[in-house]
Length: 86
Image (cartoon, rainbow, N blue to C red; front, side, top):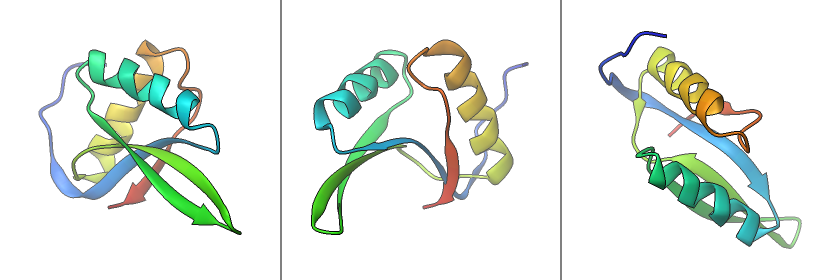
């Protein structure tokens, strides 16, 4: 895919949601090292804490899809993603 300039919007990319914080943090560090800055967001679901891994920033829907595909191709631990509103 050719390089694209960032497009601002209301969307972000979520890569994973897990109860295993260390697993999420490991993938976050890999994203950060590749200059795709991410954040870990703890949420409570049915009394349990889950950790969501999302890109920082807000993008257009098409740019969020573009970024997610770029990342999925570069980082083997990323096998799926969700484009969500910020």
